[in-house]
Image 1: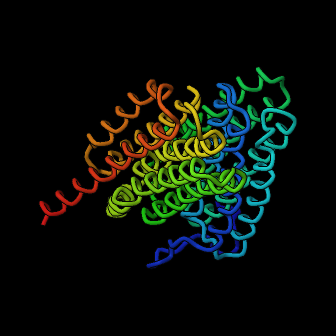
Image 2 (image 1 turned 180 degrees about the vertical axis):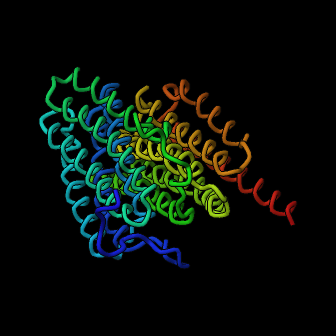
Length: 394
């Protein structure tokens, strides 16, 4: 495998500041602003159990494509011309894929699947070539990854040409293959599994990139809230719903960015073996945070459309369920980054679980603000515990 590779090194150096997030990466993220919007609008336009499943699957795809690119950009230097060209190609494919999201399970299934597979394979082949001359052991890992992408890609492409029910089944299998690969260390016949040393990345870079994606997802809540309010009558009821939606977004932001993000970043940056931490805490677990935010954005839109009367069981379920998913993700994230299990997060999730069946008996405004109060209490309790532990440490 030493016979080919880039003439110039396209990998990041080990110098201080070499792993900072670049403008190329931020430019690439613009496509995913659109992709997250497309995903949330799938469920906002049609509420059903099947559409909810589609939304979750699409969110998982969007997250996985972005996350694999983030791993690659931890090693590739986006300031190099060849890497920039790769990111532009990925942006184009990502934009086409995102445009197909509303009809991914319909007329644009082929476009969605083709762009997804091309993104995964082209990025991995590029990274294989980038590693091959200087780090053949890392290049071998990307041979394994390409095999897994190829297997999943065959399923994505096959499903795109099948009828609706068969497509759903095949795509669920493809998604499972995609997600199980890293956990099995991309075990491949004849090559075995990858070495953990090949997953060593910059903890600061990974932490910042995931935080930026959560900001993108939270931005979707802002967009949905603003768009729904601008189209609604300007009265006290709709203004109250608007303020409740905005407060909910702020509380989700505070739950992650007040203390969890900083503590986790310091933990992974100081760890000697960052690969497994990055895989668990920054690859799998944040999906729950993203799903919680995306579903809460849908709730914001639904509440602003119908702010009076009692909420439907669907709206109540999404309201409480999205917040519970987010708290569960935060609980697991804290634990995966060396922090203690949080009783306040568990109690908050249980309180939302109690509110869920009671929601249909209460006015919409009461249900939404009660959920916000639960989150606010969790934020306050987490802050008090953080200050107490900080004082004890000093």
